[in-house]
Each structure stands twice: as C-alpha cells, then as structure tokens.
Image 1: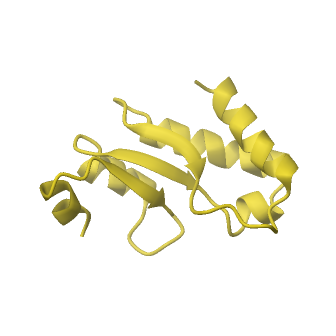
Image 2: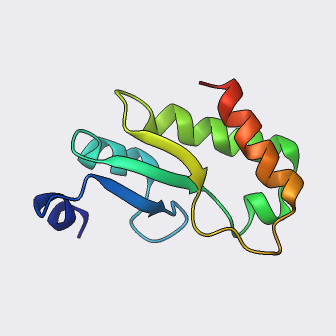
Length: 101
C-alpha cells in the first residue's frame, strides 16, 4: 500500500504507528526510506500514555536512530494525541527528540 502512495506522489507518511501490523520501523526504512519522509512513530497507546520517562526516552531514541538515517524523519507521536496522555510525557518526548538531534 505504501508503494502505491509513493507512486502517486506522496512524499510523507503520517502516521507511522509501528505497533500496527506491517509497520516495523527497520523494514519501513529499508523498503521506503529513499522515497518518503516518515512522521510520527512514538507510541501513543502505551509509551506516551503509561510509560516512564526512561521508556519514553528509549522509544524516542529508537525511532530517531532507525528512521533518521539518510534523512527523512520528523519525530512525533504515532497518531493524534489524546486527552489521556499526560502533558508532561508529551513535553518530555519533544525534549528527548531535541537532545538527540
């Protein structure tokens, strides 16, 4: 499906929800990373909602390390932010991303 989106001119994929079927970060980057920019990937269902600071930092680091290689990644949440996500966790996600640039 992503290949078809690229073929019609799409140049950024949002959301990237790596916990969904067929959304493995390494596979996505390997297969499509030369053709498309990825936006998102930090899990909103578990990590941002219930995770500790260490878990958030680990996930942000993993997303950045995998998806930024050779460009083409905008770090952010895997989907829309919901009311059950603590604001502190959202802010911490972006602080971690900024520190890893």
